[in-house]
Length: 67
Image (cartoon, one colour):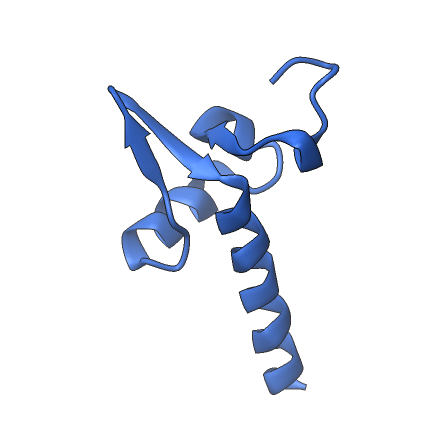
């Protein structure tokens, strides 16, 4: 991700870029559990921006249920 890229402008994130939004361990744990969608292009695993948005929405819904 370059300094001129804005997270809301991105459509796909490399895991290393997504780690700026979420921690590495969270990303891989959530991918394995199916709570965070990822795609592959060649050898690169990519996280769609929509998947990050959906994951955050899921966390918000879970927080509302817990309170």
